[in-house]
Image (cartoon, rainbow, N blue to C red):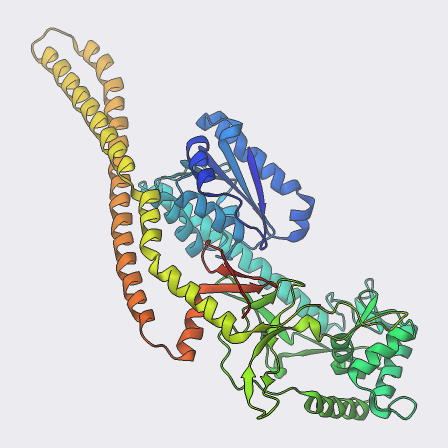
Amino acid sequence: MIRLRIDKSFTNPFQADDVKQLQMGIKAIIYARVSTHGQARDGYSLESQVEMCAALAKEQLGVADDELIAVIEAGDKGDDPNRPALNFALWLVDKGIGRTFICLHPDRFARALHLQLVVADKVWSAGYDLHFVETDEVDPNNPESMLLFNLQGAIAQYNKAKILANSKRGRRQKVKNGKIPGLRRIYGYTFDKEADTLRENPNEKAVYLMMVDWLLNGKDGVDMSLSAIARELSLLSVPAPDGEVWYQATVSRILKNPVYTGRFYYGKTEYKQNKGRVEIVKRPTSEWQVVEVPSFIDEDTYAAMQAKLRKLLHAHRGPVPQAPCLLKGKVRCGRCGSAVVMGAPSRSKTTGEVMHRYYVCSGKTRKVYEVGTGREVHRCRGRNWRQDVIDQYVWRYVIQVMHEADDVLQEILAARGDDDKWDARYRERELVAASLREKHEERRRWIQLRVRGRISDMELDRALPPLEQDIQCLENRLADIDSAIARLQQMRQTSRNAATILANVKRYLLNELTDKERRAVIYRLIERVILHDDTIEIITAWDCPGTIVFQPS
């Protein structure tokens, strides 16, 4: 069995030759999922799901162990349509790998009714059978079977919503009682798990008050910026909150937090899922709940700190880029993984005019200091990238992909509705139809024998029931084949429609677009761009990553 444990960083290991071998060797796809990373890390539930699905494949479907591929979702929510393992499993379906899709239960498949129906339709439309270990096989042509399947999806969605609502209500009630329902570490405090509240950490409180004094009054007559505070803490060997280094951003976050005035706010934000992406949404101030905690400073001191921080922000703010940035928010550094942002432009020494603008790794300017030495660490070493060259290469790649869309469509047609599949289905239909005609003819002969008095009623009663059962099975099989042929026809029509749409998009891209329109296209088609010293790695929104060799000019 091929086992693939998939997360957000997963890269498709299969090439074109591998796909052909998988199409010949794999007969069933197993999909297993757990919701939390803790469950995924322990692996017990995942392993049992795979084992139970494999047992069904072997015992009921006659599939050998080496004819199975297990796709394992390592900690993603069931109502997320962008789960990487689920998307990869559907990619296998699109490629015609296997003929059966197996899952433990519909709630592992999806915990949202609409998503369950969408994914199931994709599986059935590709001509696959859908099996669940803990429920009966779902027959898309049987109304009662589909009713039960839909009810299971609705119940799974309801159960999840009910659990979340109960948990949220319980946490809010705990806050009303003056308790904190668990939280990430807050510097200066220790979380008391028994009392569900914050206790002073004397050592860290002293460090916090020292940071406040440095910010407001300076040190040894010298004003202190956030970077200077982080460096000084490192030189004094003060332990950092989350490791051996002090980040400038950590100092900023601590000094901006109002909790040190004695007020812990619960419910300032909430997580919402929007088309598979989790978004942090700010809630109105009126909905915040307050828990009293030990205070370190008063309100006037906190207000003076925020005024000083705003002053430092404006004093050290860099120039606002004047040129449009095509890849804003999409670029990462291939050397260190940090975000890539617009940097200061190069200018002519004689005229002062802007010559070139550059993408710059944010890791090169991030202020990070090692505890004990104050030495700057984690700075990315390497050159910057010219913005116009990078933007031009990425845009050319997008145009190239759109011009090659016809080849992509041919691959889709080959995988979903090629002539071999059509011929196989029609040959199968002819054989089943011929067998059905023979059974009807045999039934007619038995009845004629009785009419002519050559056999008794008892002999006719013994002969007809197994014959009627064979006829019913053949009629059901014929209906399944007709449904599969209809789905193939629908897929061909869908592919033709896609060809028309892509042709229109290509014509549109050939015209002159505004910068805003280009950014909109990039936002839809490009997932991220990773800049290395000599290559540009382009990760598209579909499963078709490409790499362009970048030659610096």
